[in-house]
Length: 166
Image (cartoon, rainbow, N blue to C red; front, side, top):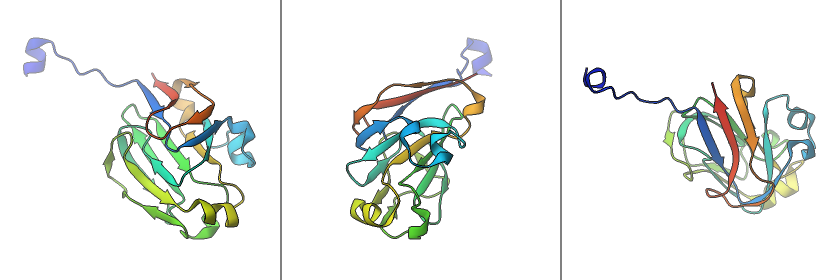
């Protein structure tokens, strides 16, 4: 009632800036040695070659999915962007070895909150690649998606993507 009286209207968040979920080197998806990601079959985004084994939330949002093998996390940002962070390639076959999750499905998270820690040595030795795609899985619903950087990125601080929904 007061909102009607005083004309205060909550603006829906339309644009969200994603911060780097890992420290390392950001690269174009075309450089990922897996066609599911390099050909954007799951959506658009970028990838990060990690230099340390810590994944933080790139946005304020909600944890939608933690894969049972702990190698991937799905987050919904406040503007509706659905973000998949897939740690390494062919890491599902590790069955959780070397991964530890710090959140659960349904948790609210803020940008910079720790999501997953992983052992870089195990990933390097037993997986196809350490490169970690960061994908907007509902890219088809976006008004725009801008890549903001390539090269060195710092988890929780370097802006990497800007996603706008209608």
